[in-house]
Amino acid sequence: MIHKIIIPTPFAVGDVNAYLVKGDALTLIDAGPKTEEALVALKHGIKVAGYTLDDIEQVVLTHHHPDHAGWTDAFEKAMIIGHEYNQVWMTRDEDFLQYHDRFYLQCLKEEGVPKEYFKWIEKMRRPLNLLGSRSIDTYLHDGDVLPGHPDMQVLETLGHAQSHLAFWSERSRVLVGGDLILEKISSNPLIEPPLDVNNERSKSMLQYNDSLKKIQQLPIEKVYSGHGNEVYNIHDLITTRMEKQRERAFKVRDMMKDGEKTIFELTKQLFPKVYEKELGLTLSETIGQIDYLVEENLITVKRDERGILLYEQS
Image (cartoon, rainbow, N blue to C red; front, side):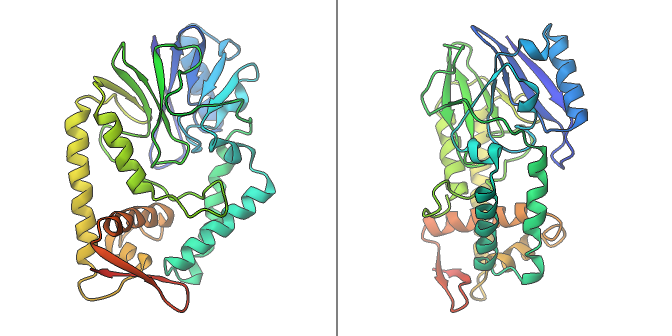
């Protein structure tokens, strides 16, 4: 049994979906943002299914973003389960928050973003207030069996988030997919700091493409997604979306026909009306296309004397 619970969020993406899954354990997959409106909806959805919050035995996170991982605190008797990368975001100690700010400041500098936009880092911290604060009790890895659900396999599906997991039932041919694949839009592969401060950032778009290819090989008939309606016919949908992503990448490459460009310059061209309001999302989208083009040897990159990365056609 998979019971869908629709939860309001204060974010532009709109409502988020949580799923109550009955098996050997009563499991809630995702928990909405930590707002009062979300808690009311969560309680109501669980009550409609015939349960209370105290009946939930484990809360499983598809990923750590605030619209999915907020109300872990409401389930005091439940185990909290998810990818290891969730942990630093859920606990948010001062060392991590300082590292968070340093990482994104360095990104902005390399991307050629003017100093007047550096205050965006403070804005990035605000949604963290809508995250839960429970530690992860059990880490899940690719190929694991989801505890309490012997027919559900854990799939590591990184890209949109560095903590992203999906849950696949071969028996019923359904995937609880988080934000991996949505009905009407592609998920934005976000830039996030690596757990090891000595590592380079992950190339989220390349990870995301690999994750899509991974699930495209499975005989999935239905995806319970993190937002909106269930998704069907995902093989063709993934093929179409990957073709469109490649087209967007070539559009970015064409913007370099007159010479070198920074990420910020490209972002302004790609998103002239929204880049200031949604700087993080638009920069992430541009970086994703740049990473793809670099990987395909279609553009080259160099660092100037100020530390800014410059890209041009190969």
